Image 1: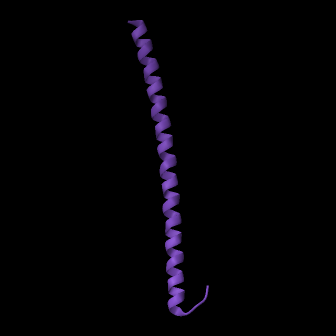
Image 2: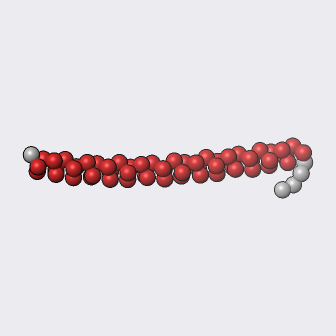
Image 3: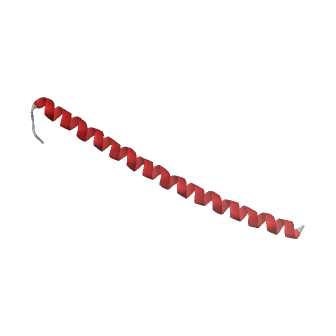
Length: 60
């Protein structure tokens, strides 16, 4: 019985460690996705400004 409790504790610690690692990985993934969306937004803004300048006859 004592051995079963020890094994269960070890498994719980390992599971908690794996869950923590997955959570940190997910945060980094979301952070990277946020950067990608931000860069995309900047590209769209630049393209829109270029189009507006072309319509207005302005040079870059």
